Image (cartoon, rainbow, N blue to C red):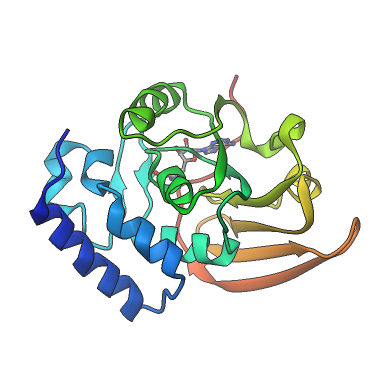
Length: 213
Ligand code: SAH
């Protein structure tokens, strides 16, 4: 597994592209500048790794477009030490962004093949989530709640109730909601019962699927 100056140069260009598209959070941009995204994808896509595009990974899934990763992470407003739950580990790239920022990461994946592959791969790069779980993200992770932030990286047909109830007061859920096209949606928990909801435009994700186990 190799990183190089050539890759670093391409990453710097990608960061400029993301800034030109409106990403401002310095922590997010610094994370993307540091992470060797080409190592998260099949080597046949290596030349495209720093384009602002989604690409296929194993098990018919995708590594999200860098802009989408940056946009969602910016909406989460992550600070070092925050406890963050991610639904949809996939390639592990989004987890790596959260870990670069200094978050304590809990991440759930429902496809066993991806879970196995990414559980081995991330620590090899030095990225160590608190826990990587093979399971169903619709349930969240009650035993580790509450979280400062929950990020869903698959298209959710509806907002799962457990994800809202596992937020701290002031905590944020960032979730793309919809079937064919998803509306990026953020919920901020204001009290035990109140949530402030804001919508941020259309995105396309692979679907968040019900548990098949
Ligand atoms: N965050 C990933 C994006 C992967 S795509 C990355 O950075 O690469 C979305 C992932 O969500 C897929 O791996 C898919 O298998 C997973 N997924 C779909 N439904 C899920 C569910 N109910 N619980 C957990 N993971 C789910």
